[in-house]
Amino acid sequence: MQFVLEIAAFLTKTGIVTLAVGALILLIAAMFRRQNDGEIGTISVLDLGIHLDNLVDGVRYAVLDRKAAKEHDKKQKKERKNAQPSEKRIFVLDFDGDIAATQVTELREQITAVLGFADPGKDEVVVRLESSGGMVHQYGLAAAQLARLGDKKIPLTVCIDRVAASGGYMMACVADRILAAPFAILGSIGVIAMFPNFHRLMEKYDVDYLELTAGEFKRTLSPLGEITEKGREKFQSELEDTHLLFKDFIHQHRPDVALDQVATGETWYGTRALDQKLIDRLVTSDDYLVERRAEADIFLVRYDVAKSVRERVASTLTQAGADVIKKVWSALEERGRFRAQ
Image (tube, rainbow, N blue to C red):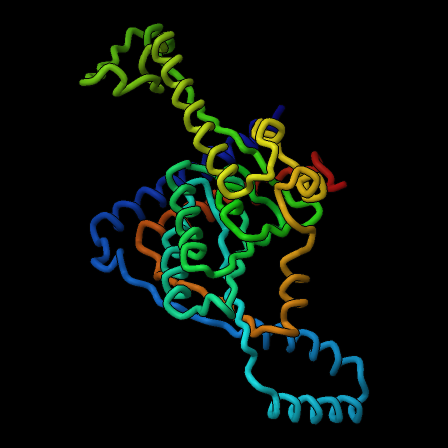
């Protein structure tokens, strides 16, 4: 019991310090907010093909003896000197989506940059996508950005190594081809909404909550208002309509998918997703790019934006919270209460 109290005291002290520091940083950020929070970023391009070649060369030079390595290096330089630039190009974009799909800001700039240069007859865009989904309107915008490539007849391949579910799969299905690792998680073609309701708790303590609206369904359900049957039915109907739009979107881009079987909110690993025709091939993004390297130049396209004060503050507080968890875990391990298995 004493140990539990010590941990509680430690958490309380650490939490108070973290909140105090966070509040101070937020106050300073509010007082000295930079004028360039909306600063325009810059496009950067990395020759990913050369990077892949260098990885192989690094192993080759470590394994071969010096003479063999020099001979290979000489031969390779000669081949590169005489080689003609590849007629095909692959532009690789990375999308790591959070619940609000905040990276759509970078994605739209990357798409615009590529569209201004890519040749529909020679070039391809590969998006390495990872997302568990999130806000409908945000992921709808992200999917619309990818659809711009199709409108310009630029082939789009989406590679999923770990997860593309819900809004993530909404983005993926826009592609001409979807490739996934065998145990990548896909699907979750469904809609969910949840929040706590404190109305009865407020009633218990005689707390009044006033909410004024104009329009019968301006507000259906809220965390503080009373849950009515009419409001619940309206909210449920809105969820069902959103799900219908989601299914229609999937059918538009992947008409061979049996929606009655897959639009249940379930997820599938890559191998099963192939059976359901949710994807087109089982392969990692690494293998796909390596096999395409023989016939195409490959470029990684990034759009970098300097973080605003608010973003840096959020990052600082997130890191502070992670540090607290690490310290607590370390304290537990020192006490011998938990052992790594």
